Image (cartoon, rainbow, N blue to C red):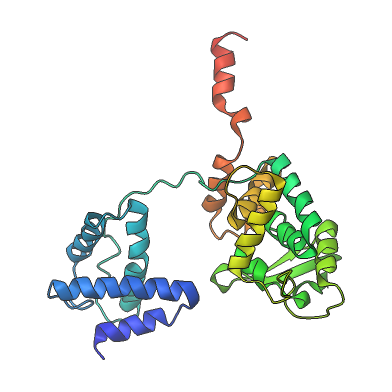
Length: 290
C-alpha cells in the first residue's frame, strides 16, 4: 500500500455512511486525475496542482457549489495527511475555490398558517403521520433523525421536562424538550408498545426509513392542499423560521436547529418572511415625509 493510499484509508476511517461514500468518491476522482497527469496523489503535490483539478471539475460542467462540495474530501485528505506528518505542508489549504453565495436558504418552507394546516391535517391521517409531522415541524428533526426515533428515546424526564434524546448529524448527541402536544402525538403513535422504533409504516407496521418520511410528508402536504413541493427539510425550515417569527432569539433558534455555526441559522433568518420589517419601508416613508 502506497503512502497516498494509506493516508486515504486513514482519512476515510473517520467517517461512515453517506459522508464516507461521498468522500470516497471524491478521493477516487482526485486519484484518477493525478494518475492521468503522472502525479503521486499525495507526495509532491503543489497548490497549483489542486487548482488545476478544481479547474478541471468546472470544465466538466459542474456548478460552483458542486465544485466546492467535490473538494471537501480532497481538502480533508491533505489536512489530515499534514497533521499526521505524511507531507511537510498542506497544498490544499490556500487553493482557490469558486465563490458560492449562501446568504439565504433556498428551501421552500411554510408560513405560520401553512404550518398550522400541515400539522392539523397530519393528525387526521394516521397516528404515525401525526407524530412525524410534529417531530419535523416543531422539534425540527431531520428526516433520518425522525425515522430513527425509538420509544425509549423520549422516556426520560429532566428538570421537570420530558425530553427526547437523539444522535444527530455528525453523530452529535442532542437533548430537547418534548412539549405536551408533541408528547400526546408520540404517545398515541406508541400505543401499547414499550420499546422499539416509534413511527411505523401504517400499512405493514414495519419501521420507517428516510424514503418513507418523504412519502408521508408528501401525502400530508397534498391532503392539506399546499400547492408546491414540500420535503421533510421544508418542515425543519418552517420550524426554525416560525420560531424566529415568534420572537425566539437567534441563539435559541440555533439551539433548536442544532447548528454548530450561528451563521447557518442566520441564513434562515435572512430568508424568512421578514419583508414587513425591511428597511425600504422605513426609507420610503422617510423620503416621502410621512
